[in-house]
Image 1 (cartoon, rainbow, N blue to C red):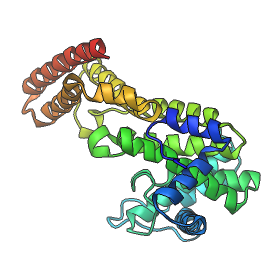
Image 2 (image 1 turned 180 degrees about the vertical axis):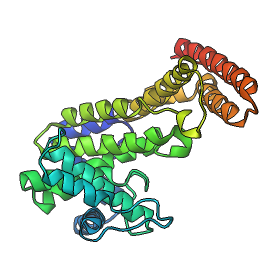
Image 3 (image 1 turned 90 degrees about the vertical axis):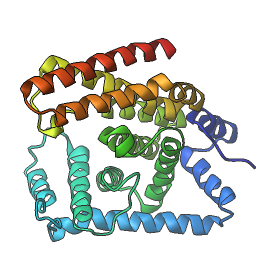
Length: 305
């Protein structure tokens, strides 16, 4: 039986044809393509879950300083805040944030984590899984099943889009991690494969917004120009991420256009121009040129898409 899939549509078709959840389709895919017994596949995922849980709970017992000493103890502070019952996020999200921060501390101190999908975003999935397990008394076996679901989403992102911050920015990392956690959470709470994929799309779109490619370079730029660059940046990254997760054919069509690739390059060039400019006038001139080129490329890209 062929259980491989290249897009979310093919994954959903497999789920419907075989009356299986996403987690089981992914598990069977791993068994078939890897020529590995089911017990061995489950054992590896259970081991990954053990590492996730350890990395998310260890700093709460003993705070860990990062290698450079800049962070450490934040997860413990979040846990103390949670205990006051004054959070506006609710128990599940508050716990998820606390556990995710704990994984960040372990990663920053060169500890052992599961880089799913990346080291920088490794706290999102275990944070959500542990929060749901604690609040709803979910067994480890069901969490392992949910991780197969998350793995399916991560596989689609790796195959059709990107999880690399160097390629798509931080939103590519945390966006895919959020999509993985959202899909796994929906299945844990009894959702259908279609509902899981709906959650994937929502998470990817939300995570691709409000991230500023200029602000973190310490430059003070005009707000209108800044927003124009950010809007086009978010539009491209968000569309590529969602297209890669939902329909490989659409993604291949979009990503295959040189204009779209050029737009991403121009956005980066505009950002770099701001950082490299010497003097206020030089920065303004280079930023204006980058914005104009990016806007033109975006208009061309919309015509192609």
